[in-house]
Length: 375
Image: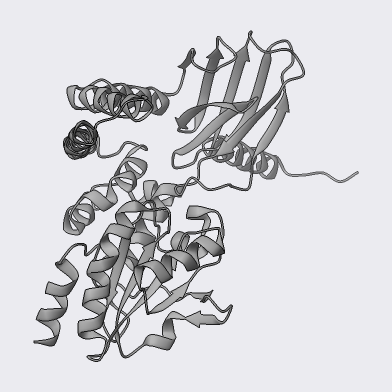
């Protein structure tokens, strides 16, 4: 019989306890109930991708006695969607426990308890959805779309309603930014902060983003949103080296960004169905004609999925520069994902070394920038 010294046994037990505690500190136990759904209904827990793209690691279970359970990673705070029958409720959790009660089949009546980060998330969403700017924006948007669906329309009325939506969109964006910045400054250690900041990153000065990130605990930058924030600052801020990409042109030939090194390059993200893109194309055509012989060119990256419409728009708008697309569904375009494109139009101006020197130049901003470069 092999005998183990008492000290060795105690040491082994201590290691097991520490390992168990460490393991549990990285996960959240989700205990849910839904009385409105039948037993046997499939319940899914899906990680939230910062780009809102399909993700790996979706977990599945079956509703039993109207209850379900999941154990998921939450080491630095993570976001998930709980799905059933194409309905879902969002959660954002820290390690520990989350209790979820879903009172209807549409997932409109959901209450949670036991997880302070989820409580913070709900409070933030409530404030964001119930301020004056959001209310005015929602009302104006509803009135505009109701008018678009009416039988009799007056062009002047339509323009007036659209103008009101546009102005309130700007006010809402300012309000959302202020709410986010206030929340982060009041609670700099919150697990939510990486997600909140990432969602506003295109609306804030880059210096502001860098200063805010320095307030975060290092651990928080290790969650999904924190990693995206770090990548964005390193690669997509002004001064960063534009990520390399390869994509097929209109003839199916591969085009590499590095093929254009030595030139000033505008990487322009657009689509045939994007009205603001089409409206801005004449400005790009004008700039291209003026500067194409001065070491400047454009690479158009289309988010089209229909090649016929893509080619038709290129011809109609007179876009006589390199055009590429993988013809995937909208924002699934691989280059768009690499450059974190969440809306179009969007663009990046690169110097001959491939460094980003400006972003989102619209109207006459591109021509003015190039005038300054080539004067």
